[in-house]
Image: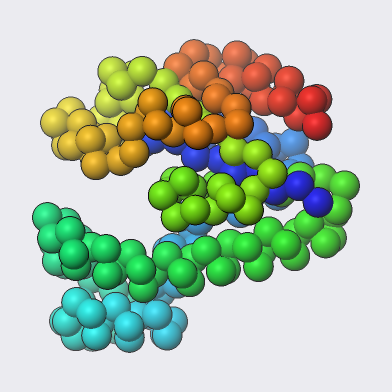
Length: 196
């Protein structure tokens, strides 16, 4: 069994990497999807979030008011840290359960964990390797502006709030250049897979 963590800053090309791995038939456990699942109506984690941030963060239908949660945590470092402590444990536990289950089914194939905060939450320590997808900031900003319709300043603020590219790259086992075209990115992935 091999577990490979994949991470990268916003707009670096991480989704292009994981999409290609899925096309090749590999299992990719997506922490962002798990984060969405564990905040759906009825999940017990929602009650903990409501206790932390106020009952009104839950709508009458039981769903989480994501904009209100964001307003309550961003700009409030202690509250944000408390929220992340509540949610990250569940996400990490669920991600590893799914990764290990996939590895048991196909032990000869590596399992990839797509985790935006791979290093920040310490999941890299239990991975056999960590791949970082990186691209120059101007490319990342342009991609996110086109994809999400945000203003460039908003994207730059999000980048500034993340671990620096230099730090991610320093901690990575491998750095993939996500600034070029898809064939170039696919070639880099193919080379890393061949090394395994």
